[in-house]
Image 1 (cartoon, rainbow, N blue to C red):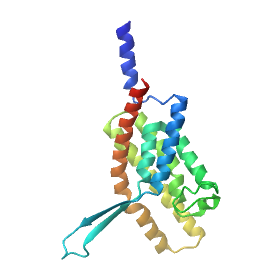
Image 2: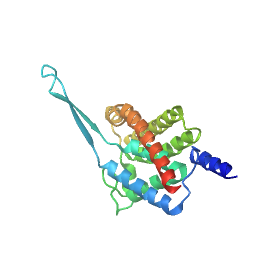
Image 3: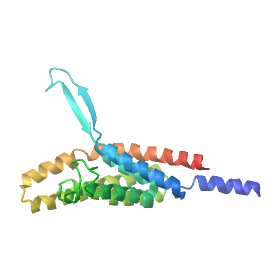
Image 4: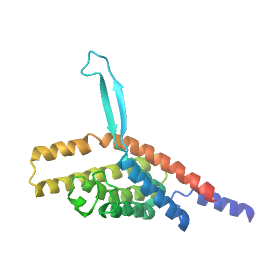
Length: 213
C-alpha cells in the first residue's frame, strides 16, 4: 500500500499536465509574472560586437527587449488559466490612466498606438503555447509552442499595425519599414530566447512542485 502511494506521488510529480492549484501561491506567482512583464517592457539588452577596423564601422550593435520571451515564460510556468490572468492584468493596468506600464505610456487611447496589437496578441500567445505544452513534455512540443507563441504575436501585431496605418492614412513604405523593424528583424531572436525562456520555466515549475511537495 505504501509503495503504491509513493508511486502515485511520483507519477503526479512528473505529470506534464499538472496545474498550479494552490490559491495563495498562484496569486503570488501571477503577481510576480506581471512584475516581470512590466520590467521586461523597460529593459533593453545591449551588446556591442567588435569587428576589424577595415570593415564598415567599428562594431555591430545588438539591442533587444525581452518582452516576448517573458510572455512565453509565463505560459510555460503558469499554464493557460493563470498565465492568461497575468496577461489580462497587465493589459488592464496599461489601459488605465494610473499605470503607464506600456513602452510608450498607457491609457485607453493606447489602443490606437501601432504597437498595441503586439500587446493584445500576448493573449493568443499564452493560450496557444500553453495548450501545445499540455500535449507533452518533449523538446518538440516546446519548440512548436515557441513557434505558435512568437508567430501569433508578430502576425497579429503586424495586421493590427496595418489597420492603424490605414486609419491614419500612412504610406505603404512607412508601414513596411515599421513591420520590418518590429517583426521581421526580431523573429529569430524571439524564437531563440523563447526556447530558453520555456526551458527556464520548465525548470522553475519542477522546483515549485518540489518545494510544495
